[in-house]
Length: 114
Picture 1 (cartoon, one colour):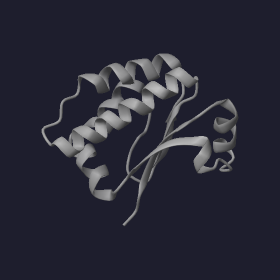
Picture 2 (cartoon, rainbow, N blue to C red):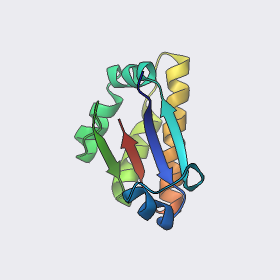
Picture 3 (cartoon, rainbow, N blue to C red):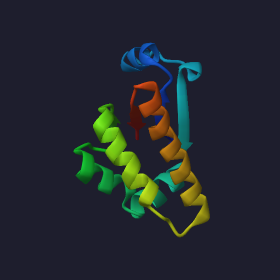
Picture 4 (spheres, rainbow, N blue to C red):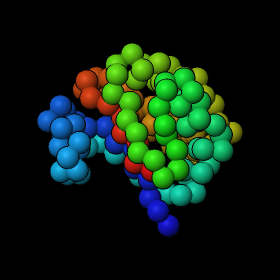
């Protein structure tokens, strides 16, 4: 089973380290998704909606990042309006929202390693 990671660097230095695959756990705020959790979110259209809205490529076996502040804000607005029927998946959505909020506050980004 493959884990999927969604991470927000804690600061610009951590973001630079992440670009060189040198960031440690202490440099990142991260959410680890199991394959099942990833596929449940994907089936709800969360990632495809973000892709269409923000021009990114968040998908199975892909890595991408959202680093532009305006795109982060647009993505955050979308995510806050999504209501999922399964409580456990809605809880994951709240964690993703938190990563977007932290990225905006810290002036970094949200990175998807799928």
